[in-house]
Length: 148
Image 1 (tube, one colour):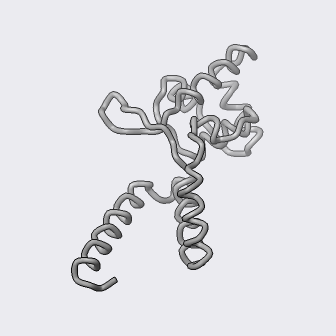
Image 2 (cartoon, helix red, strand yellow):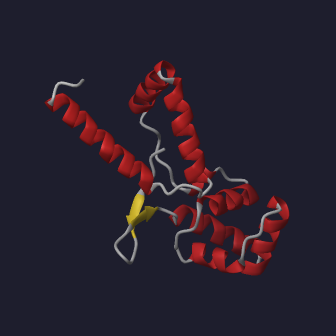
């Protein structure tokens, strides 16, 4: 999944949550809901608590965890991908991944488990950056020393 990133006030890259913020604000205004009422409705629907301060943070454009974004999407009946302003996936890349996964099913399980971990805030997405950097190093090293 490819997402648009924006620079935050502290210079860090993050997900573009402008669509989420805009849609949440529109629903808040249309239904005349307070932040506490929104949090209560989401909690009742999902049986998972969410605070009014989290709703406030979203409206201010601050980052929240993926689980919270999913809860809000379910409450608003809007797909998470829409809320995250996700670009259309790169079909060529996706096709290549499907070939690799079909040839190496163990990789599919590893990546699927990893993505689930990131989506559930159990694994930091930065770990993938480290894994890719290591893989690039190993590939370069192996090519240089004839190990591929």
